[in-house]
Length: 237
Image (cartoon, rainbow, N blue to C red; front, side, top):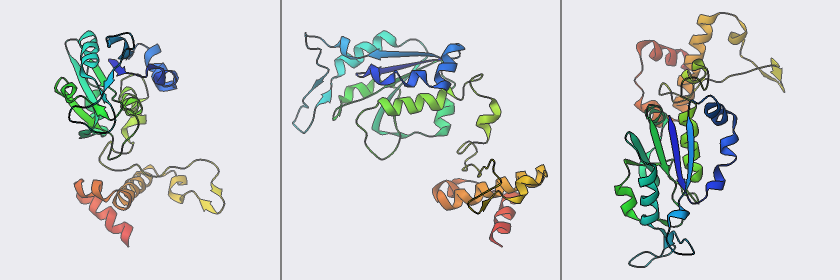
């Protein structure tokens, strides 16, 4: 797989590329990472990639020309182009798994007050990380890339990603390690029992309970099995 970042701040990705998961994926040739600077594609001696919006308004807008020119250079057959924008669909784990199946993922990081809307027309889709605004699209693009790369075969052990939050529509169950007690807080007895059946039942019950409490929106969309319904009833007793 190949991931290409289109950005006006290529230096922002230096530390990201050195993080263990990303560096391991690149070293093992599981994933190729490309960071393309938009600025050299802007004409003129000052390489202006922003301009004031038609019709007036506060702030500057990322120009379409430089972005579309760099996009032409990096795009190839099978590329999937994503613009990070507030108007995009909300990113989630299902989308991460979808992207992990792509041959080439292009992530366009916006800046300033926004970007020329004609850039959107050349993208395959718009994606947002949530209902909030950050200074630029660099951080969101790194988050997406990290969530995708860790799903690629050979990057992490498969078991490490199967029981995580959002993978099955629920939040993950609580986990503990040594010591068995700290500041009066004890590890649940069932986890020390050695009874794997009881442990799995407890974990499922906790996953349901935490999701219902912390993310009722997720819980409302989740289809409970008959066994899970009984687990919830037992938890309420």
